[in-house]
Structures are given as structure tokens and as C-alpha cells.
Image (cartoon, rainbow, N blue to C red; front, side):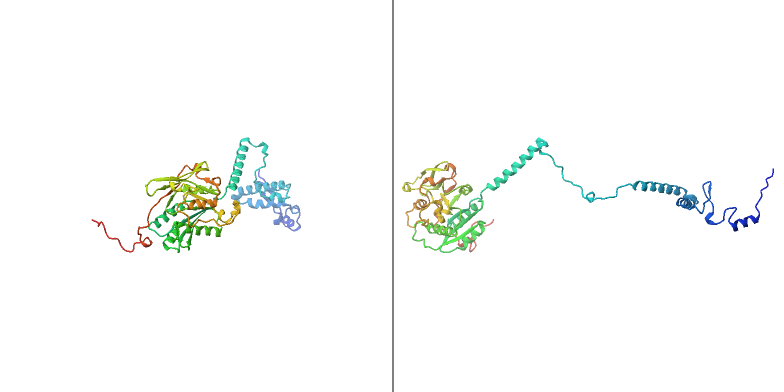
Length: 396
């Protein structure tokens, strides 16, 4: 059966457009839109945000290849709205202590609850550190050594001074070497002293020693004058340049409180043999003397000039040691040979009870006295060759 489709008359269309009734307006604001297979008719009176959003989605949706993007954007906006609604209840009050840096200090621990092994180790370390501090505070500085050496121009002077200077260089400081010459300072001696590397004082004895039996007496007295005038504090030791000394001797000198003595090995000139002269000790106490020379048995103290040392304060502070008089302690000029030592020692101590034997027991030889006659030997001036030597053995 054939269907008859009836169309509206043109009058109806014109009337609906003019009066706005009886149908939908063809205005763009009231134009229907489609999403998928559904057709929507927007109302001009209900323009809500959701309606506008759907309108925007429809416009984008009509782009065929952007359909997936529209769905993702829709889900994103829904999730964003849900998240914002939940964050609306968060506490936005930020305090200053919330922004402070974290405290990295270790937590406080009760010492009573610590591991006993760790506590024992910590206590041991602290005790050891305290003991080291106490030991460092109780260590006394080394005493200064004042070595007095008279010298004069002779064949082996340079050899003797260089040998003694190299020994003193090995001794721990503080040490001052007082070298005394006669009448004037020689350039050769001054050069040797500068090269030794030892702190020294070059002193000159202006007194004439030609009429004195022991030429070293005036020179030693000049050194004693210098020590007393400068008030040098230390242990005074008369070290002649022709003797041989060990490092042990100089280290032992620092143990002396007032007066110390020790045995000296001497090479006898006539018999060409070694003899011992000096104290016999029980530990550090002097109980007697030993000497092989009958002519010197009349002496009170049997000591060589390089066999004793004493505290320098005896020279410039006699009240400290209970001396009732203040006469200067010096070596005597006109004394018989061999008695110079005993007369000087008698001014420093009263008897053996004020002496100290070193090393303990006086059982080691730390000093040798060599009698070498070098008066007739000729040596070059300044120990320098003025001209070339003659060839004795030519090169073949």
C-alpha cells in the first residue's frame, strides 16, 4: 500500500518563523545538537555550566579522530573535580616549626643502659687521655748544658775543635758552647765554630797566660766571668778540646743537681798505658777515689779537669746553696800542677756527701784524656795549602 507523505504548507513555515510558536526556532541558540545517536534540544532558559560543557564536548566530538581525546579529557576533568573536592577539607595552617630542618643529633642515651663493653672501652680511652695530659704537664724541660773549652793555636787545634764540635752537634739542645781564646779571636777558630752548627759564644781572655803554669786557667776564668755576668742557668762542664767524649756523658750531665763526677781514662805519657782516675761509687754516692799516680795522692779530690760538672747557679746565686760568703768562685793561678782541680772543687762543695756519681755506680768509662805533645809540629796557616805539593808518585 502506497504511503502518502503529507507536507506542510508554506504558510505554516512562514508563520512559525514570524510568531515563534508552533515549532522550533531556526535560531542558532535553539538549534538541536546530537551526541552519538541521541539528539538534544537545548533550552534558552536553562543555560547551566553543565549544558555549556556538553555543548563544548559535542563540538569537539564532531571531529572524528578526536573522539578518544575527548573521552580522556572528560575523565581527567571529572577526576580533577573529585580531587579538588577532597582537598577542600585539608588543614592549610602551616607552622614555623614545620619548616625547620630535621634534628640530626643522636638521641640521648642513659649511661646506665649502655652496653658494658662499650662503657668500659670509653672509660679506658678517657682515662688514658687524662694520664697523657698529666704526664705532659709533669715533664720538666731539659737542663741547659754550658760546655767551656779553652783553645789556642797549635798543630791539631782544627782537628780537636772539629771533633768536639761534631760530638756536641749530636747532643740534644739546649746547649751552649763557650770557646775561649787568648788575646784575640782567630779567623780559623771562628770559621770552624760557624760550620759546626752548634750554638756557641766566642770569648777572648785578655789576661797574659805566659806566666801561668796552666795556660787554660785564665781562659776558664774568663768563661766563668761570662756565665756569672750573663747569669746563665745550666750545668757547667770544662771540656778540653783534646779529650774524647761520648754522647752518654752529656746526657748524664743533665741528671746533676749540684755537683757530679765520674772516672776518666787517662793515657800515661811515660809508660804508654791507660790508667783510671776518679771516684768510686755506690750507686750515685761517692765512697772513695782511685788514682795510680803517687805524686797526686796528697790531693783532697782525685778528679781530672774534665771529670766533673756543677750547677751554674753556684756562681751567681750562692745564697741558694747556703754559702755564707759571696767571693767569686774561680780557678787559682799559682797552684802546683795537678792540684788545680782539687782547689777549685773545694770552693764548690764541702765534702763527698754533696757529690753525685755518674753514671750510676761509676761503672762505665764515658771520657778519655789523651796526652798528645803537639808543640813542635808545624801546620799550614788556616789549614790551607799555599802552593801545590810536589808529585811523589807520578801517574803511570
